[in-house]
Length: 145
Image 1: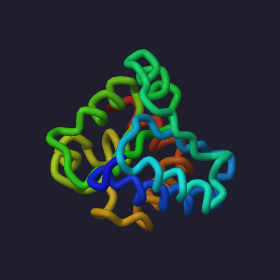
Image 2: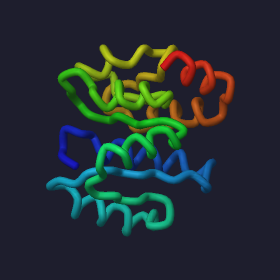
Image 3: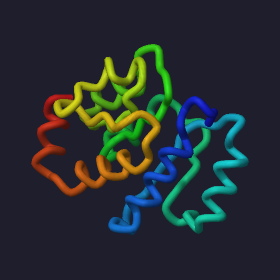
């Protein structure tokens, strides 16, 4: 959880997305210097029941979570390649990612996932809704991944 990972864009998008999908859960793996601010955001916006901070997870836990997830949100402002994208796709999990260096190269937009406008939480929320509400698209992305 650092500034360049775009965590607050993802949280803002989830907050919007959750209004039409109150059953959805948002799991955040890892830690970092922004953890106190993330915890404050979760508490302030009463998201304790739907946003879970998992902390460090090992490779087996990561694989299990990716295989069980509807999609992965990758909100970083820059990535060298986007290893998390490749890991998610290897597990058959579509990715919704920021149109940022590295991510726009590793996500095949409209094939293995969706790219959203750079740092635009509104567009990210729309893409989350699109993939959640379209089982045919989800199945196609899962197969392509």
